[in-house]
Length: 243
Image (cartoon, one colour):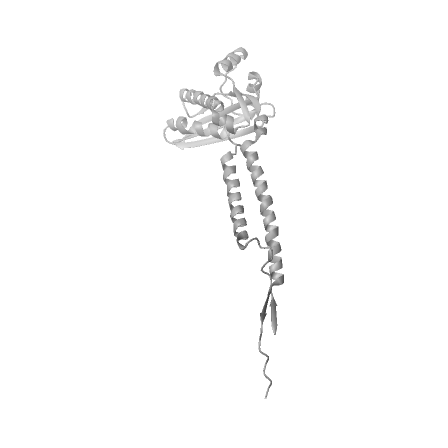
């Protein structure tokens, strides 16, 4: 007679289900807490820092001075508008106060210096100190063959570090630098370290859904608990005696 027992198998299966349900319960609790933190995040508003910011005129490299001045003015205006937008206030942890162009010209006139010709960090630092700002945006627009290049960066005046950098290339009319290049540059500079809350909502929501479905599948047997333990007995006839 062979006796095949399912007791040990069912015991471990029941134990596994209980432990897994506890794990799912803890996971769901953690995800719900995290979701509430991401949704509310009261500390986010308190952690915002404020900086003064100046946007210098772009450097021309193969592009006319008049076109470069127009691009510089557009860049400064786009930065100012974006910083004042509701989108920026909701997503960014940095508040900027942009120095007006007329105020910049007045300061440069007092020091008898030109505001153009600055593309390296050392120059940006000097200009930032003259303007008494903490951050400064410098950049260059160029033309190589039929391709326009647009580069800009934010420099920290105190630490001499580049905190954000952006680049845009386009082959075609220069108008595209106004329509697409500048918005791309501004978004990259201002939102470089921003993580959208919607992305967290999708991740947390998906994890909660998967955990809930898994828990539902495991509970279909009425909660496990080992009620279905038992033995399976198979009777095999004795081997007949040899004649």
